[in-house]
Length: 397
Image 1 (cartoon, rainbow, N blue to C red):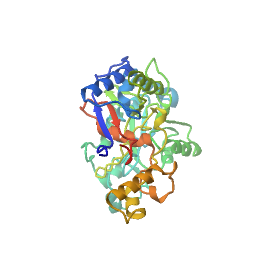
Image 2 (tube, rainbow, N blue to C red):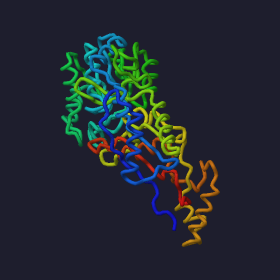
Image 3 (cartoon, helix red, strand yellow):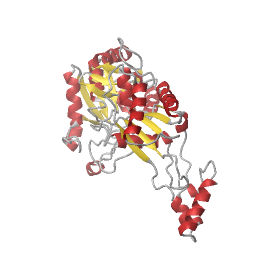
Image 4 (cartoon, rainbow, N blue to C red):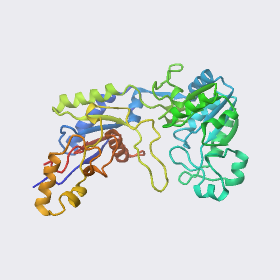
């Protein structure tokens, strides 16, 4: 009888990770212990994935608001600073904003509207239509925004982020001025020193600002991209991908992850004789249809992975084959025909009708999304995910 189980994703429990812990040893031992406890056998091309959080924690990759403030003062002069296009998040951005405000005398905070980059809404599109506002052209000050839309609170968190961010800035001793616009260049009417806080569009924002006459332009990826007073840092992403650790400290996105995934792969090979794939993952890359929130607040889904996870899926669409090429077959004849087609498929199915409808995304993004949903972000206690059968297909026995 053919095998009845396809892909299986398991959350693996691990110790609470502290700074200085040997993350390679902990992940290896946790997976080996889990395989005994749950009675599964490690196989070639299984996938071990670990959250970016436990890697960063083991590295001690933290920065304080004072470290951020010092870096901001050194790079932007410590006077008026435009802080543009941040996401609306107490976990992701609030502590970063505290550090920035501590490094400035005045913060001109420019919020995108009706939503931030990852889909957190300040107001609805319907409200914009009702008021006759064009978010691509109209620049609103705080007074005008309040006249039009009042005091809106986030659907899920119940926070008025406009009020929250304004108070956070003033509590740090800086003057706050808030505007609402979507063109990065709008901030230049207020200041020529800018930190652009968008994640995935940051290169364009920097380019537009510099071409329009900004004097000092940095992205969040360029704040804390080197140590400050012995702090943590991330040379590639700076504050991007950081999370709140305490009220005065952020955990940065992990750095130098490639040696970690390679070492875990080698450890498992030495222990079992099986060559598994290994990756570090952060946010998945998917959108909630109700809250409209796009999950990817990290700069990438996976900062490091072993070579077998490079590329995109190369799959045939079974229902296309069943409805078209083999529409006259059924039962075992249909099953055998589809299996033969899979066995003889081209190495590159891009543009072929038989692959239409398969997911055109990178393997690391797909697998990272699966891992993010498996491990959760709360109290499950499973920061390691073990996946089996991901590379199987209908012919695998």
